[in-house]
Image (cartoon, rainbow, N blue to C red; front, side, top):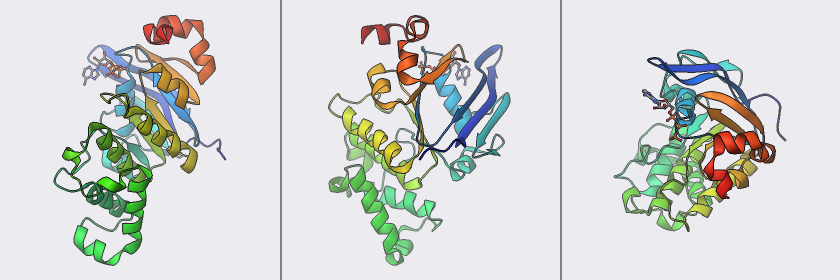
Length: 256
Ligand SMILES: Nc1ncnc2c1ncn2[C@@H]1O[C@H](COP(=O)(O)OP(=O)(O)OP(=O)(O)O)[C@@H](O)[C@H]1O
């Protein structure tokens, strides 16, 4: 059951690039069991907001709080250890290892069992089973011995999701998870994201341009415009709002 304690909160989060305020005083709480879509026109500040949360960018002012703890001063890796999990397209993968080995390393690191593939793998049956089950969950078990670069684009994305699941974050962050995918690959990744929310009572943040995806997955939508939070509410209500449709979502929504 969802609790009211936010897994993640931003308070007055702001970043300036020269004279340009890319994210402007954004205060928002994200609770477990809720998938929040972050939408807005190009350049609205969505990815920058993500970068401020995950620590790729340092805020000019404001705070990022995970389960009540201020993590604003922490580096990205330390934020990951506090439970922020962000899917990065391919950059987290070891290209020379197989899909299974990549997941094994993520499982090991979550279990604090070090980075040696051979030593740990000869002794920790539980970790092996976990890695195998994560690969099954993302439907990549049959590709376990394939290197990431030999996987299709869609399967690479699934592997990224597998690494994220293996890390067991409190907050899952997806930035346009279906970008560049073929039409037939999209549903599987969307199902995986839906499954994450259902199974683990996780807090999920999703930056997404495709309104059909937003509509099908999200419980809540927040809208950024010029770096400012301009709408926040239950998905259907935000989508239906004429102001949001005309001013902030534009052609994407009117076309649907
Ligand atoms: N490192 C940076 N230096 C200078 N300006 C930046 C930097 N990163 C982002 N910006 C600016 O901040 C604004 C917000 O960009 P951001 O990429 O967050 O928007 P977005 O909502 O994710 O857009 P899109 O939907 O096109 O991905 C833009 O005007 C962008 O040019």
